[in-house]
Amino acid sequence: MLMTCYGVIRVISTVILDNSTQIILPSDRIDRCYASSVVQLSHSLGSRPFEPRGQINVRSLKSGSVNIQQDSSYDWKDYKEAAEANEFYHLEAFVKYNGIERTFLTSTKACLLYESQLADIITIHVDLLGNIYGVSVATPHSQQCTGTVLEFEPNFNTTVLISYMEHGPVPDVAMYVQKVEQEKVAKERGETKDNRSFIAKYWMYIVPLVLVFMMSGASNPEQPAR
View 1 (cartoon, rainbow, N blue to C red):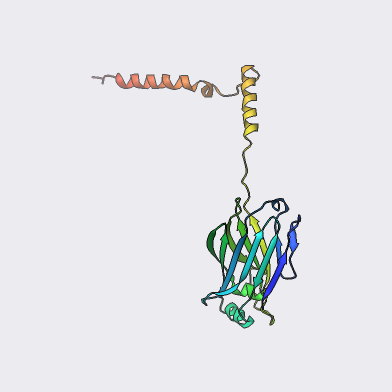
View 2: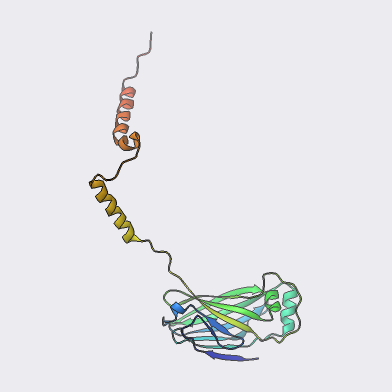
């Protein structure tokens, strides 16, 4: 069964495209304009050959124009057999963006997808430059398979997430420089008190003296007693 849906992202964090597909992205990133990209999906159960599943068209994250087409291509009995055999469900994503083509492979347990009745989460990972560097699949179902599932229509109920790479913590250089300058001025005024021990204060004088005594003792050894 072919499923097509369209959606436009507005200045909110979550937008429901239709009853079976949604796209969620942080509101502070919506104003960024990334190039359009195409994600072609293929899937496989266990060791079976890959078959086409559908396509995700991300035309622009700024305007939020998204088109998704999906076709399960497998019967629910196929998912049941794969789940009972403890096999994996494999998803291959062929991505085209900015003239670059890359292929990503991700997997999850077939029993988790089967027991969630084909409800899955596809996450598109985007770096700070707007390039797709990864695609992953997961299920909202728990990590433990129970084995109790009623017959269902093999139609995907997909949630598409856009995951942006975040900046790491940046050191406060200005505050550190200001603190060093304040300590320097206070030391020049004599406002700071040196609480270090005697050795910590004058080690640069003590060490040379110790070395001189040691070297003088080594050069003038005591004569053996007769």
